[in-house]
Structures are given as C-alpha cells and as structure tokens.
Amino acid sequence: MAYQALYRVWRPQTFSDVIGQDVITQTLRNAVASHMTSHAYLFSGPRGTGKTSCAKILAKAVNCLNPHDGEPCNECEICKAANENRLNDVIEIDAASNNGVEEIRDIRDKVKYAPTEAQFKVYIIDEVHMLSQGAFNALLKTLEEPPENVMFILATTEPQKIPATIISRTQSFNFRRISRQDILTRMEFILNDKKIEYDEEALNIIAASAEGGMRDALSILDQALSYGDDSLTLKNAQEVTGALSNEQIVSYMTAIADNKPAEALTSLYQILASGRSALRFTEMIIRVCRNLILYNSNSDLSKQMDNSVMTKELLAISDKFDNQRLFYIVDQVSATQKNLKNSNQTDIYMEILTVKISEPKIAKQALAAPTEVKNDSDNSQEFDKLRDEISHLQNEVKDLSNGVQVANPAPAKPKTHRRANTNARLNKTAIYKVLGSATKDDLAAARDIWPDLMSMLSITQRAMMKVAEPVAASSEGIVVAFDYAMWFEQVQDDSEFLKELSDNTSKLMKKDCQIVLVPKADWPKIRKEYIDNNIDLSNPDNVESKKETKKTDPTVDEAVKLFGEDIVDVKDD
Image (cartoon, rainbow, N blue to C red; front, side, top):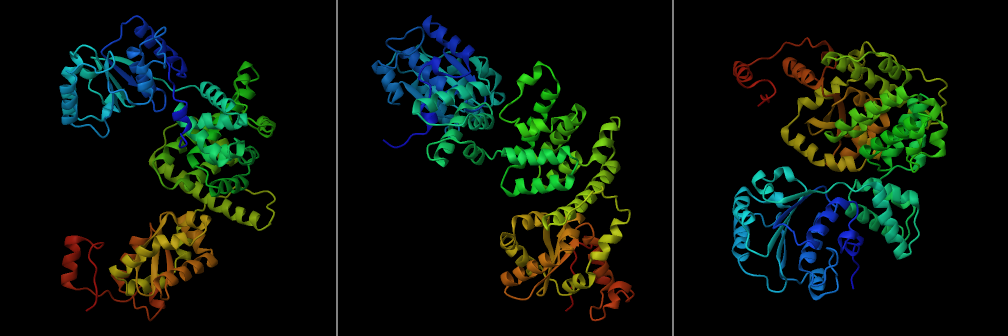
C-alpha cells in the first residue's frame, strides 16, 4: 500500500482518541448514549483541532450496530464501511467547491429519501462558511424541519461568516486550540509506537510551530522524519520549521546584553542569511524575554520557564537584563511585528529594531522618558537618527569582518547636514547625460532585465538593492533611485559593488551601460532641474552652474500647465 501521511494514519476513530477537546467529546458521547442527538450541529474552530474527525466519529456512532457508552465499535459492518469511506448514508461535501444554490437544492431534494443501509443519513458539510447567500437560504428550511433520520454536521474555521439564522438552528460547539503539552504527548505516543528515536527539544519546537493544530504538528513531524531519514533530531526540527538554533539566539542576545549594536547587527545578518524567518525570529526574542522575566522573578514563576528555550548560556547573561529593559524589548519587538506583517522590507525593520534594543543611549532614553504621544515630526526625526546609527554601525560591521578591531564603538552622532552629504555623493553629470537621451523604451528594457540582475547578486547585495528601482534609462546608462538615502550612500561608497552592477547590466543589455544612483527623494528635483535648464552636457561646468538660458516653447508651457511636468515629456525633433 502507498505511504500515508501521519495525520491520516492516526486520525481519531473514537471520541476518546480526540486530543484536547474533552468537553465536546464527552457531550457528544453522552448524547449518543442517551439517544438525544440533535438534527444539526455546527463545529467551529481553528484548523487541525478535530472538527472533521469528530463529525465522522459522530456519524459512525449514531449508526453503529453495537455502540458502547456512546462510542462506535469500529467492528460492525456499518463502522467498517464508514472507516473505508464506502457508506452511502454518510455524505461529505466540500462547500469550498460546491457552494452554489443548485448543489444545496440537490441536497434538499435527496434528504426526503430514507437511508439505504444505516439508521441515519448524515450530511457533513466542510468549510460551510464558503456557501453563497442563496445557498444558505436554500439550506435554511431544511435545517429547521429536516425529515426524520437525517442529520447535518456543519464544520467551519470562520463562524462569523455564517448567518445567525443558520447558527440558531444548530447545536454549536467551539473547538479550541490544542495545548502544547497535549500535542507533545500525542507525538511521543506515535513515535514510541513506531519505535523511532527522537529528541525531546525537537518535539518542543514542532509543538510550538503547530500553533495549537494537531494536524499541523503531525505534518511537520512527518516532514522532519523524512528529512532526518526516520529519526528526529533537534537540528532537523530547526531546519524544517525555520526555528533559530540555540547558538544563533545566544549570540544575538549576548550582543544585546553587552550593548554592542555592531555585533548584534552582525549576528542578525547571519541569521537572515541562513534563511530564517524574520517574524519567527521576533517570536523567539519575545519567548526568551518572557523566560528571563520569569527567571529574574526569584519566585515560583521561574518554574514556568520553557526549558527548551532557556539554555545555560542564556541563563548566564540573565543578570545583565533587568525587568524594565526586558519589558522595553518586548514592546519594541511587538511594534516591529506589526510592521513586518505589512511590509516586504523586513531586513530594514529588523536592523532598526536591533539598534533600538542594543544601543544603550537609545534604550536609556526610552526607559527614562515618560509616556507621551509623539507627533509625525518627532517620529521622522527619530527615524533619521536611527538610519544614521545603522549606517555608522554597518561600517563597523564591515571593519569587524575585515579583521579590524573596534575598541569602544561610540554611538554615532546625528548628522546635522545630511542633505549636503548626500548631494556630495550625487554624480549629476552622469545623471544628466542619461536624461539627455532617455527614452521610455530604454526604461522598459531596463526594468525587464532588473529581476535577472538581482539574481546575479549575493544575498547581502540583494538586500541592499531591494529598495531600489530604475527610474530613467538611455542607450548608455540607467538611473537607479533608492527609497532610503542610507542605502544610496552605502552602495555609492562601494565602488566595487557599483562596478559589478554596471558590468552585469552591460552583459544583460549586451552593450556598455553605466549604473547611476540617486536617492528617490531627490529624483523629482534633479529631473526638474534638468528640464528647466536644458543643460549642455558638452560643458561640465554648466552642470553645477545652471546658468544657461532656459529654452521655452509656448506649446510646451501650455501642455505643462494642463498635465503637469511629470507627465509631459519634451523631445527634440
């Protein structure tokens, strides 16, 4: 027989086999034993918590020829036929693909006929919230007054989408997430039954990743066993779930504890480069802080620590954190999580978070300052300061990676003339040269090869170029705009990387092509300066002097008034 997934092999066959839903299973068992079952049930709750399994068990139990205390015997002909999915009187319907009025009308017509083999005809409608409004209306009357010996069991993960008129005609059961301990116990039982060796810490990681779903836990366990060749180790579980290794989290938290943002950023880059999820990383930081708070409490609460997370190395640095700072870290990480879920620029948010929680000056100011509402200008200034901090720390990281020892890295002071510094890096001559012969076709060609160009870069280089895109192009060059001035400066100062970009672009375009960089915030101003002055590129002095007489045309002026400068594109005949 072909291999079956663990969650299919170990699907519960009786109410007592269902994990973590004792109240529901006991209620259903008693109803079957006392012959007081309802004509309609609604099972709602998160995925993988036993809704469909309980529906199938209930369908067997009410039809079993030899029930025992409300449990199906799984030995009679009815139970065997139900287990093999060949009992005609148990009809399973997927509402996601059968959600129309016609499908429900077909059910309404067929419920009039008596069961062929069993005592009850049972309809199990999975994901019932996917039914259309018309389908719900067609089902309503049948649910209210069904024929004798007919039972409906509705299952859903989103009960809020079901009309109240439907819910009021059913007995509703809310399935809850399964506790981590119950998931651990079940996985241990399965592995012991299969005589497979396993690491307890690996099971803890899988149970945490399942987020209360038994089916998810068994699916991850199945994957980890396949990856490890029928054995479960901590490393296999970490690779399959994307969880951080103990060494990674210890390295990061030690740098935070020692107030060394440069080392913390180095650890962060290594973690992200290994393919770890930024969201999963923040969850691990919160778990570590939670356990440190319990450990520092010096009370019975410390017994509630998660020993799979709190290694000896983390306990050794616990005295470097007080609870006030741990609360601050949790607040910052929680705020970052909201941004991670709504942005593709996860690396930038993780860098800012790392600087915030590791830079002693910033942390002390945040802890000492009273709670107040900041306006947009305050937030903007703070963001600029943090960008400067990161830029300074990245240079330190580069020095560390080259073997240069940084004795006492002092926090970078905010630059008061940042705009002047950015302008000094701009190569306006090269930008104007591209604009002099720029066309929309060249820009389209540049954007077409952009994904291929990104694939030719290293992971770190791609991270820097995520926030950049071509904004103008000619036959000889491409102007690339950066969302953040910090990354523009980083790439502009790296001559080797800039040369590599130009060389790779030339290969893809099959002609010499220069890459010119510009901050996106400065791009509209630079483009307007070029249009206004119509600079003569043959004389470089004119680039900075901007003294050439503006050439105007009445027709062009009128078009600009009507449509705006960004839309009007003036070309010489």
